[in-house]
Image 1 (cartoon, rainbow, N blue to C red):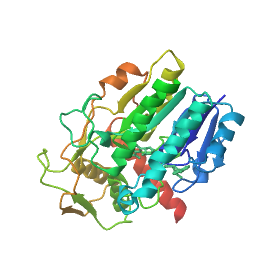
Image 2 (image 1 turned 90 degrees about the horizontal axis):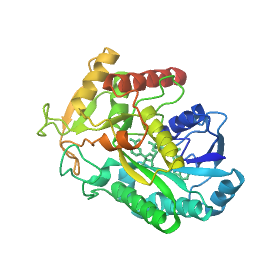
Image 3 (image 1 turned 135 degrees about the vertical axis):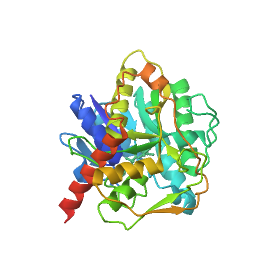
Length: 328
Ligand SMILES: NC(=O)c1ccc[n+]([C@@H]2O[C@H](COP(=O)([O-])OP(=O)(O)OC[C@H]3O[C@@H](n4cnc5c(N)ncnc54)[C@H](O)[C@@H]3O)[C@@H](O)[C@H]2O)c1
């Protein structure tokens, strides 16, 4: 029996595959390599290059690889694309997820794990945000994530497809053993931008919004180490293999860090003063977004290992340095 990871050649996916292999699981990756990399899929996982929206291929893989659980990570992360080409985005995020869910249900697979986003809540109505807070997605990305969550709820009721939805904030860091890290081209993630500046590959770091009602005026965000996020998927799988019911959980430590705190930590780790430039607030950004973590700790056997910001950023910096050295 095997676990199918769509998007397993990507950032989160490659760490998830390492986590699953480390737990003795047999892993099949389905990835079209649009933003992922063949080299990022560790052996002995099998990589099948193909599209998550290809129903015939999905049926073939689910049957021939004796798949017993599906983790659906495939999809683009780029919110600007959702505005520039919304219909392509609908296809990628929601229509293809529907195909993966439908193929899973049709092939009798009862276990499904899906990484969603804290963005589904929209502007926070309370802090920290609990899973029962109302959802009012403010971006197409968040709306698509919520649509997939709803599809899963309905598929469970209709076909008995048990699922765990994990809502993450900013996933950051890299594998502590240096086997994987963030290599996505063109990512504008704060951590990646700060690290590139620390290595001299960017001349400055723009900070969008320095006049928020927060201790240092910059936004407070929810960060999680990528290996802890991957471990949460494995814990979700174990939950679904037991008598556990479907769950929607925040994948969070329950604490936040400001943008300046992240930049300061990178400066200290890199031993270098960076050029930080204040910019206007971006539409849709909120002062603080921190999720409650009590439910995931109560429901899953998940013990985060790398929650300190210094560790998250230290692992990310080590990966960035290694990648820069390899490219030189
Ligand atoms: N990185 C974060 O901070 C974060 C936070 C919350 C949720 N997530 C979710 O986690 C998942 C993975 O994100 P990531 O950061 O690893 O992104 P990523 O771009 O590194 O990985 C996505 C992977 O999916 C593949 N892919 C895309 N479309 C595909 C398709 N149609 N068929 C097959 N493969 C396809 C890409 O080639 C890539 O390997 C996404 O669903 C994302 O929304 C990520």
